[in-house]
Amino acid sequence: SFNSPLVLRQFVRHESETASSLVLERSLNRVHLLGRVGQDPVLRQVEGKNPVTIFSLATNEMWRSGDSEVYQLGDISQKTTWHRISVFRPGLRDVAYQYVKKGSRIYLEGKIDYGEYMDKNNVRRQATTIIAGKKLVKIAVFFFFSFFKNLATL
Image (tube, rainbow, N blue to C red; front, side, top):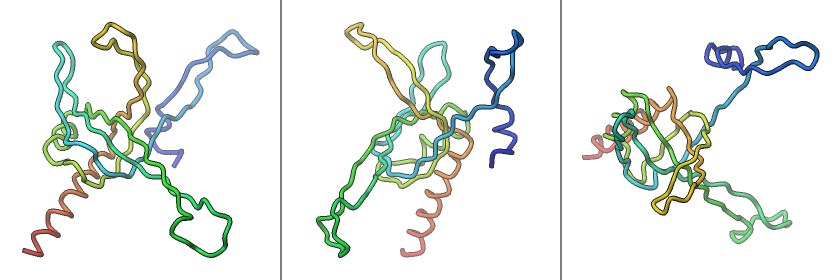
């Protein structure tokens, strides 16, 4: 909902065309992803910076590629998109590192971030990252549901 406290606190300053004063304007940078983890998370610590848990997440998009009204197996096309997920929040970062595993199906909310870095050959590269937010706790829900479901079958 657009009336949530999180959204109302997100503002961007821009210069008004009609007045020289600054105007506060609402903006939104939110991403919702549901997919499968592509690798076990890694915990990285760079000197002088906060630790971060990083993993990849695959999402799939499917569509009908044929014009036929009758469903045929060959009519379905699929595209997989890989996302780089970074978790900075201390509690969520540790939960993600400890409990998220390759192949886990998870849901998360976060924001998209565009950044730059220097690669090992000193070439400036651009990177797109999803910064996981408060809803990352749903990862633990999926894990615990799966854990208890497996316990019930033992």
